[in-house]
Length: 530
Image (cartoon, rainbow, N blue to C red; front, side, top):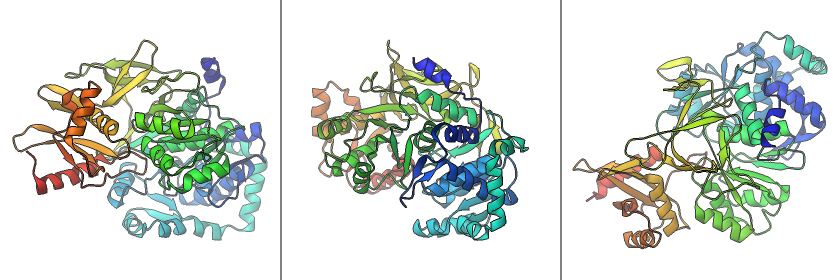
């Protein structure tokens, strides 16, 4: 049945064509998107406004050019995204929370020369300094200025195009094949400098076809999207998938409003919520029992879903959080549990249409690198040392295979368990110890607070694990007791516990390990480690 659902959707088209199909399927007047201004917009308005905006964008940009987009989750972002799609430009979604240096590097890597943003947003988000830096290398256009230039002639032209939109779109000399680049996203930078990930129309639409086998995107559902659209989880799962499937989408600009979001979900009667372990724990702490009563699909990704978070949602709301798994390079979903087929502690079974194998890693006795291939695998990377050139994925098995860099184990029922990032293992006395396992031990011991672990090299050139916890009273003895009780290896007990630091979190919900390592080294230098 799942395979029938997957193959029934035509993936051989572009994102703009998929939008037109959705408009025809669900009705031009069907209100599909809403944002914090509480003025819902329908398919007709999205398409018409996209055409109108594209008339101006066409004069300022070139076909197939990577165009920087720096806006929060909003209807305005939706219109800009599809305006670029309509005229064959490629939106490059910039992470405006990453700082001037990272944004500048991203622009250099993708050879971005033009950025679209909003004056009101720049002022509200206090991004004046990054914009000043970017203006040295890029042309910055503001939507407010473009709006002022729109005249009656442009409006009439846009309306006439809309009346024959499919014909006009197909007549344009732009890249309209499913294999053409549709969007550029950038890796979060949690483990180094960001890379550009180029996804095709087919990549994104294939992933929609795969995921809708597990999550119902239909007119009976309302999706609350607070994950940023510069992140693949937010862009495809939180925005494009429901848009193409007929589920109403409420776009909220930040996932960090723990007090406001639960109440808003209750008022909207949302049925689908995507997020991370960090966000779900935060929402649960502030929500009352009625806020989430309409939720049906609650899906966690981007980081490990902890047992205490699952238990908290079951106890407080009687709701099941489904765990999924994906990476930007796979558009992003690789696997997900569903309401009928769920195994706690796993990230579900691999998507239809994908192949995989486990690559053995020296020193790791359990599991290995998860390597995947399928229609949702990216076209390739844009790298800083080879700007503008797409580097397709490959492994020893050939082109098209992508090594996720995650250590995984797959059971007899094909459920996948992620054991940790390959880079997030420490070598202690010849044994490879997962830093994720260290964090899980801490979460088991102190479920109410955040924890993160890294490895450092001490003065004797030995690798040592350091746990950073926001529990000010954390002590080794408590970890030892829980480890013994649950038969967890003593190697997962960290050498040092730091309780004086606040754990930095990226806007995507992941822990910012790069920044954390800098903070820890500074603290270690001050305190010393034995």
